Every structure is written in C-alpha cells, then in structure tokens.
Image (cartoon, rainbow, N blue to C red; front, side, top):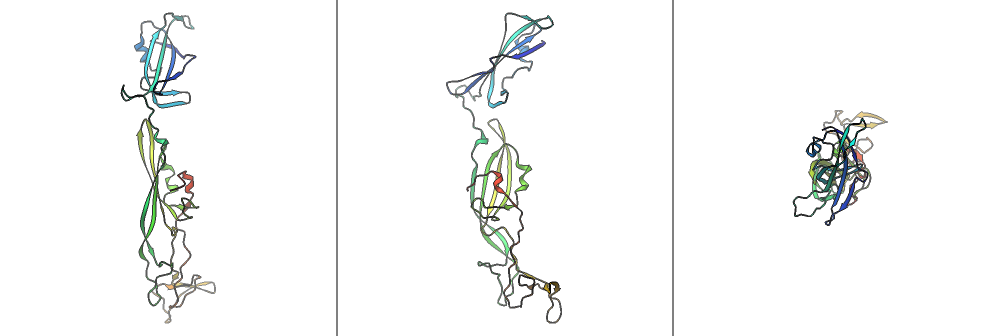
Length: 296
C-alpha cells in the first residue's frame, strides 16, 4: 500500500468523561491510499497513526496515563481521484484513548503523580566530636601552672534533619554548590553559620509511568557556629611592629609554643591564655535557593 496522504479530521480531537470520571479521547483521521488490494491490517501496520498502548500526545498536551486502547479502521464506499488523476481509496481511522486499567473490574483511576507529593521532613538529635581547648564558659582549659593542654576530643550535641523530595532531574550538576557549606543567613531557626549541609543523595526511580529522582538533603545544626577557635600561641612575637623570635631567659629558642596576648605579644608564663577570634573554615551559601520547606 502506498499512503498518499493522511489528514486529521476537522472535528478531531474530541473527548468525553465516563461514568467513573475518567476521560475518553478520540483522534480521527482520513487516509488516502493508492491500492485497493491492501486492507486495514496493512494500514494499521504503517506506523502513521498513534499505536495501541501509546500515551496521549496532542499539541502541547501530554498524559502518560491516558493510553490508546483501540484503533478502528473502515473504508469509505466512495473513492476519489488524487491530484495526478489516479484513483485513491479513502479510509477512516479512529483512535480511542482511555485511562489504562489493571483489569476489567477496576474502574479507571488516574494514578498519583509522585512529583506532586509533599516534601518529607525528618530529624533528630545526635553528637559530633571536635578538638577543643575550651571549657563550658569558652575559657581555655589549663593546668595549675596556667599552661594549656593540647586540643582534646569532646562530644557536643547537634540537631540533624533532612528533606526528601521527588524531583524531575538529577541534582548532580549543583550538589557541590551546597555540600560542606554553611548557611549564609538565618534559616530553619538557626542563625548564620550554625547549619551545615552534610550531604545530598539521590536515586533514580520509576513509578506510575513517571521517571524521577528521589533526592535527600541532609543538614546539621549546632548551637556553636561551624567555626574554628584556637588558643593564641606561637614561637614568634611582634616587637615594634616587627616579628621577632621568642627567646627564653638563657637565650635559646623554646621547644613549645608560647602564649600570646591576641595581638602578637608574648604573655608571661603565669598569664591566662587568650583565645583568638573564630576562624571561618567553611564557605557560606544561601540554602533558601534550594526551595525547601521553611520550617522543620
């Protein structure tokens, strides 16, 4: 068979609603063919029309759950002449689309779109360890001679929480913009620099005809900001705006760092140690740009 042309009818597409509330759509075509010897089997196998099992697609409309259930083909009694004068045979083709059913007893239901599900929020408390030289009042821990101890491991509490959201595309292209960074401004009840993105994971899934990614965003809040605090000490001091080696009474160089006053000047051996201003060791970013829920 040679299909000379296919046109979609003027009143196509059309639609209605079933008793169960599901949609029924129709697309109707007219096919002009050159041979009377070929029947509907050849026409249906031409690939020119929507096939049984294909989903609804018309213009800008798509619906993966409305499936072509049947196609009927019938030949018109009259035949005509093609533009070159040859005889052409005219066929009517009707494609019916309905919501796909699992069996014949279940009324049609439109499956849930997993991309429209609400974001899942989970959380709980935990602990983290850090190297510290401070006590509960943020003062350096010293021995009876007011010498600081080496940094020691301490457990501190934190709040861990995560958001789970279904997304259309993978976050691989932007994950590193957030992972390991801290909040630039107040968010989720935490002041700036108190919340750190611990990780972003994702898994590609298929459900109800949809392809999507289930993405998990993990965060940790700690009351102390995500900063580094150290005791001021070293082997050199500032003298008359110049950096000079610290010397012991016998003129030798010390083998241990000496206490400094926060401005580069050596303290006496019996003076209290001084803590330096916090160091910002994590880059900051705007977590609000992720579009996650504003409350946890």
